[in-house]
Image (tube, rainbow, N blue to C red; front, side, top):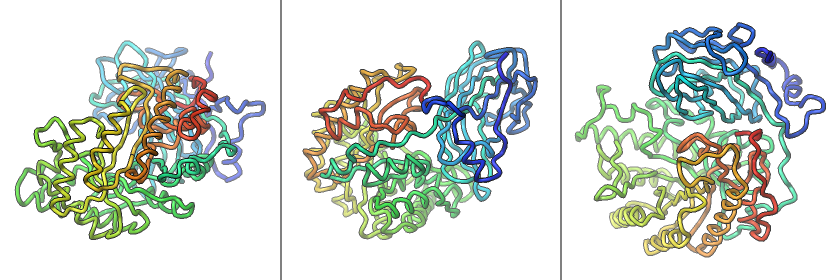
Length: 531
C-alpha cells in the first residue's frame, strides 16, 4: 500500500523554518525532499477543500495509483476545484516542484495548476502549470515549480479548468524540493566578459533570494521586472495602485548596483478589463468620448507608475507589441487601436517624456527579424519620429529557437534601424530547444543543449560586432528553473537560458563567455530535476 497523505506541521518559529529545509540524514544533494504527498488512500480528503460551492470527497471510483482518489463534483464555475492550504509548509526562497494527476469524469477540457497568495488582503495568482488537455479516459500530469518570494498571510495550491465545469478526480499530488546547490563562484562573470554593453536578466522577486540572488548579482548588470510593472500588477482597479513586487525588485537593484529596465506601460495583454469600459460600465466602442476617457486613463496610469520610480528606472518599454504585419497598415487591431487609432502610442510616449525627461523610451516587439514585421515597425517609428513623438529606441525581443532565425536575418534587423538614429536593445532573449509546438521531451536532450549553446555563441558574437548600435542585451529569465517557455506555447520542459535548473552554468553560458569550452558541461537534464 502506498503511504497516506502527509504534510509538515505549520511553521511556528524561525528555528523550525530552518529545520524544514535541512535534508533528512543521509539524503544526497540531488535527492528531492518531499513535503506534501496526497495519495488519498486513507479515505479522507487529506486537507483538500473546495474553493467555492462544489463538493470535495474521497473516492474509490478511479485512482491513478492504489485504490483512492479525490472526487470534485457539483462545480458551477471554472475556477472551482480542489484547494490545499500550504501557508505553513512553503518557505520563502525555496523552489518547490508541484505535481498533480488529474482526470476528467466526462467530456474534455483543459486544467491548470496555480497558487493564490494574499498580502494585505490583496490576492495574487501565480500559474504553476499551464492549460493542459484533459479527457475522461486518462490521467494527466500537471507539474511545475513555484518559489515564494516573500512572506504572505494566505497561500494555497489549487486546480481549475479552462472552459467547463465537469467533475474531476485528483490523485497523487506531491510537493518536493531539492536542497539548494551553491552557485559556481570560480567561473567568469558574464558582465565581466561582455563589456561592450550591459547584460541583464528578466526576473521575479523570487530571483532575489538565496543562491538565485547571488547568481543575479554575480553575472548581470541590469534587471527587468518580468511582470511586476505591467498594468494588471500595478493598477488592477482604477486609481488603486500596488507596487509590492516592483518595489522589492527596484530596491534590490539599487542596493546591488543593478540598473532597471521598465517593462511595460502599454500592452494589449495583461491589461485589466476595466480599462476598456465606458463611463457606464459597458464595453467601449470607438466614440470621441470613449477615446478621451481611454487616453485619460492611460495618462493617469503612466503618471502613477513611471512617476513613482523616476530616475530609478531610466529605460522603459513604453509600448509593447503594437505591430501586426498581416494588416495592410501593419498596426495590431488591439482595443487600444480600435478606440484611439495611433493616438495611444503618441500619448504614451508624450506623457512618459513629461514624467521622465531624461529616460530612454522604447517601442518593443517580437519577431522583428521577420522582414515584413521589421519593415512595418520601421515605418511606424519613422512616422512617429517625423511627428516629434519622443521614441528613443527600438527593442527586439528575440525569442528564438535552435534553428531560427538565420544570423544574417538578425543582422539585417539591426542594420534596418540604424538610419533612424535610435538606440536598439535586445530585450527578451531566450533560445528554445524546440523547433515546433508538436515536440516535447521528458528532459532536454544533450544535442539540443549544445545547439542552444551554439546559438548563444553566434548571436552574442553578432551583438558584439554591432555594439555601436546595441545599448543592452537582456535574457528573459535568470535560469532554466523559471522560464515562461515551460508553459508556452504548450506545457513542456524547456532549457532556453544560460544556467540550468540548479543554477549551474550550461554550455549556453560558455557560448557567451568562452565558446572554446562548449561541450565541457553538457549532460541531459534528468526527469527528477525541477520542471
